[in-house]
View 1 (cartoon, rainbow, N blue to C red):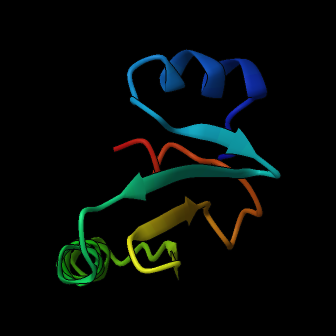
View 2 (view 1 turned 45 degrees about the vertical axis):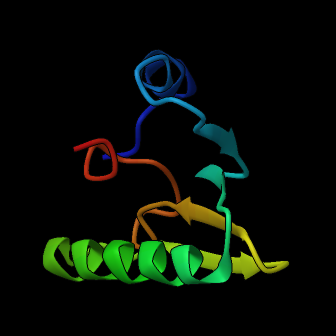
Length: 83
């Protein structure tokens, strides 16, 4: 079930750096080098596969990663994301 904007706002208080943007939760990460970027992306990928809930992962520049996540089947934010 989709969460309301108010429910999402309340949950975001406990999620450092995450923001609501276009029906997705989004966070930017900055790393000291490309190896750390790739290590992080691999870890996120393994966790996502285990949960069967896959985020969008954008590697940009050489040291930045943006993660965006929503429940694609619901076209928005559900409790599944905020586990």
